[in-house]
Amino acid sequence: MLGALALVAAPVPRGHLPNLVELPPDSVEVQALAGHDVLRFSSTVENLGDAALVVVSTRATPAAPFTSVQLLGGHRVPVAVGVRYRSSGGHDHFHLVGFQRYELRDAEDRLIARDRKVGYCLGDRRPAGGERARFTGYCGRGSPNALRIAQGLSPGFADPYASDLGGQSFDVTGLPPGEYVLVNLANPAGVLQESSYDDDAASVRFLLTRPPAPAGIAFVQVLATCRAARCPA
Image (cartoon, rainbow, N blue to C red; front, top):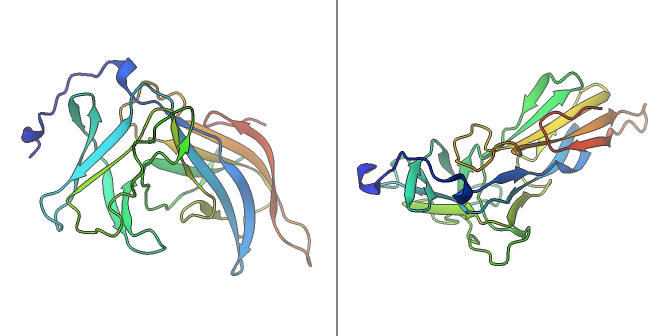
């Protein structure tokens, strides 16, 4: 199968690659849900490179695992990513596993938790200087037996995920008041080729406050936003 794809190991010129840019988390707030304090936030990745990010996943039968490649000009480069179909929560489409990662850290940069998000359906959902959206589908929605899934992000477009979507949250019930840092990372394992990996992380430092009872409703105050994985006070 892979031999038929004419895979090429030679590197692609850096001027003909996507450049994923993670924006700082936004819409950061705490909601009280069923006795839990849930920290919700949005995430957005832009492609500010000269080429589209294109991932094509194929399989021989509906029972077989997907094999994925990143299209780079005329090259098909294998990428170690997972593709998973989710049929609950109003999704009903395939997800690219591990495209982003979210981390909650304390003021001393110690990891507290990582996200449990299923995955992402890449698409040109919002212009960021681009003029023509190319990837407007929803990753095989309603077709769990699909044999081919193509998804991507065109130059000058962004793929935002609103704070009310599944996986855009951390349960912070019982977390003591204080300063924390929320870190969002694109392409965290570096499996997708880009022209630069220097802007794949962004973060926000915030203060978690817990007023005394009877109010007792936790809330956050954003202290700083940073275009890096570390966000100093």
